[in-house]
Image 1: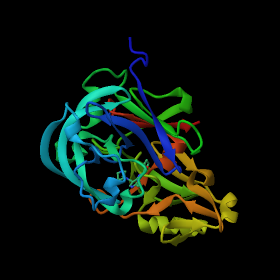
Image 2 (image 1 turned 90 degrees about the vertical axis):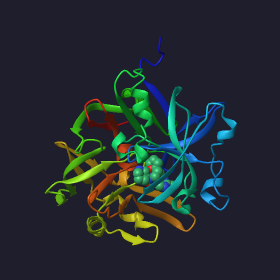
Image 3 (image 1 turned 135 degrees about the vertical axis):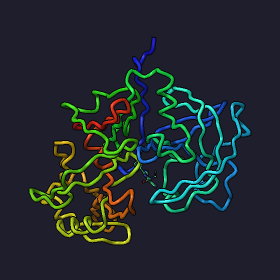
Image 4 (image 1 turned 30 degrees about the horizontal axis):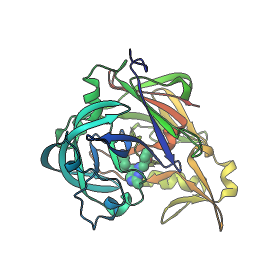
Length: 338
Ligand SMILES: CCN(C(=O)c1cnc(C)nc1NCc1ccco1)[C@H]1CCCNC1
């Protein structure tokens, strides 16, 4: 009998409330990797043993060595993926991937070049895309689809908990096959994914305090477990930042820590419900030598059409709202995280 009754948990590590990742293995004997479980993409990639020594981001991370795995099947097809934040290039391989103790034979990419920015700052080695198959580069069947076809999960859903305290253990949890009552209170509110095959929903409005400021005409939000912050169209975000008195510097928006307590909440109207973030949810308070620094976890990002303009709701949103991604019913559910 299955001790987890059709659900498969993977504990996550929380790095500074900005990076959340869990451990998987690839190959026999197992080679361990820390990966982001990313609903904003649909491919699995890890750094390759054969990456160029000049790729700093590569040799500072765990690398997959196909020559050490007797279950490796070579493929060699070229691979490249562009995120707004960086580019990965490499080639395809196939091997046994184990997620939460569940083995799947998986086609994945061995990255031979990782753009230094931002991956030298990554505490994780690679990315395990939890997106839909139609957004997968090279038409590769994603990991979660391979797991669903094994019919071992109680429900064809997965859920994500991100802790809001780097000292909390575990720093988060990916649960395949269900939702984990340890990490949410109250009921789930569900909304249909906007477009088949993407973890996107329609925003009916964004308000600051009591005032509706954006998207009254409706706009799109990607629920992206692999992004640290909330991003929106640069013009909207700069207007929002001006409203709360934040200044933009080379690393992002900062605000005078004295004013944090009086900051208004920012509310996203999704699927007939309001999801508010208070300053506790959208300010990262860092005590530094030269005094406290208060970082605002909103970023301007102009995603070009046809995908954009979009808002991206990332880790700081998910840390407040425990999220269920339902492939059976193509819907997303939010409940208040504990
Ligand atoms: C993983 C690539 N991503 C990042 O935003 C990203 C980049 N570089 C670093 C160093 N970290 C990132 N995300 C940290 C994180 C982990 C969980 C929450 O946020 C995005 C690219 C677009 C698709 N969605 C994922």
